[in-house]
Length: 443
Image (cartoon, rainbow, N blue to C red; front, side):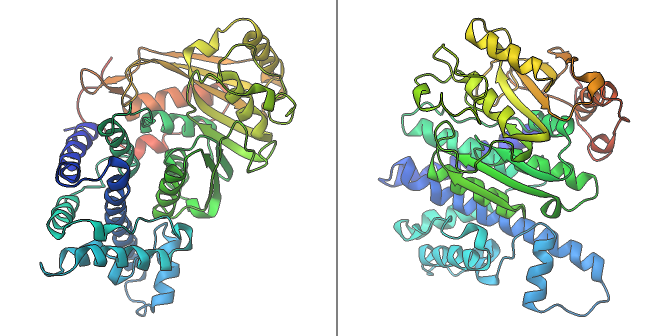
């Protein structure tokens, strides 16, 4: 069975277990979503911690036993959080039936925060509102999560739960998971080996996680090589991204703010890499608040009530003079007319537009729309300043289910290596060497 199908089955089973809270309590989805996500986070923190300890054991074998402070430093160097005994998910599972589980879980969250400054005040501590039997059931169900069955399983389960919580509360489930296969393709093309990575629409931080995976597959320690900067407009999503970065051992500065109006990171010209999947076709943006900000929007405001070219300029402007950007964009932005065409012309004349990749429909987790991947490179050599590589990858995919497509490792590697050859670089099969795929290779 493919990783996608394994994860899909896992999500449905976990959601069924979590949804009993809605059925058996009077709480709204907003009141029970964070506690449920917090338990999944605690489980994943222990998973990463135990894997890090195993790696350390292999490395040190005959060395002296480490003290707590030494172990904590070594665990963090392995890209994981230090988890004290009283914050271990497995310790909660061993508690007697008459134990006050709500208090014990609250204490576990506090203990984990106390050892990891990056998640201070980010974890939920409202578990005393739930009955013991409900918490015991959730702990048992979440104990069975397998985090070794796909790339960024943690982030994807989180996004799935966010979507289901929104639906159960009568909302549209508007936030959707950026497929890890597309995020990975972005990372393979912009090659974020070292530097500052910015995502002004960072969601749960999946772009940063995939950047780290790219670095680690090239035998570097991601926490040593990358600094992550993100922005999101809702506090709960900011906390989620902080948790995702922390559990992967990544250094990050994630802030709450509306990226149209709040330039929290003073982003113009600051970043080596920009990666993003912004919301498409946003309307009602107050452009009069932005039109004088020439540093972030150097080509002016589009006259249409559509935010695509506001995002595109923001990504362009955030790059330093050698920076690269890769982002997901609605297909309609590629051939928009009028004022948007004029902005696109200025972008092309800047020489920074590097690669465009057309992607098939049905790649997204909850919607079927096709999209394009755009890539900027402000450090393009002179012999390529007037060139843009277009890749039509609409017929490259693996059909995972009737409704969902992705790339096999071979397909992803093939597309990325086309770009490397265009740039005059050697092909890189590191990703292919570290991944294998099951099942049908698709079209």
